[in-house]
Length: 159
Ligand code: SME
Image 1 (tube, rainbow, N blue to C red):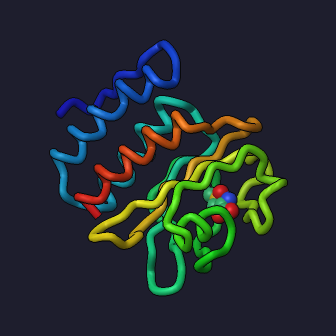
Image 2: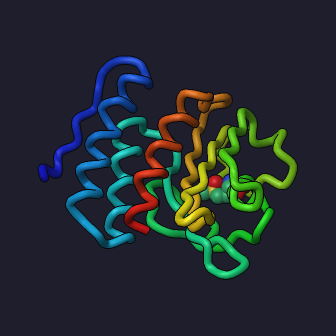
């Protein structure tokens, strides 16, 4: 597997269409969970240049920071807290167009303006979340939700 990521020039849909098969190939070539989360965070970042892309893993009653790309982040988030803890507790993708309007949002970086969090499920349980932050308002929509959910379904095999 080549370590060079190909990034489409066009719409975000086209970027995701090019990203997903490359993520699938990366995950097929490696079984280590940390290595895979690290490369997937890097691949999403290299494709879109978001502010922050990374994983939090479920550990008991908390989410614990995993591999990520971007500024330093909070290391632990309680069940039901913030956008990440809400996604975990409610077992659903949470799209936040304006983080200031989300009650309980945890501001790891003051530069973050919008956010999407997608649960990674394994055997019917949430085992991690993928968190993506943007420095712009309203960056994420149903297109991001659909493709990032697809990406998180692939992650389930390696976590
Ligand atoms: N904003 C998140 C915390 C994680 S950082 O964005 C990396 C939240 O409210 O859960």
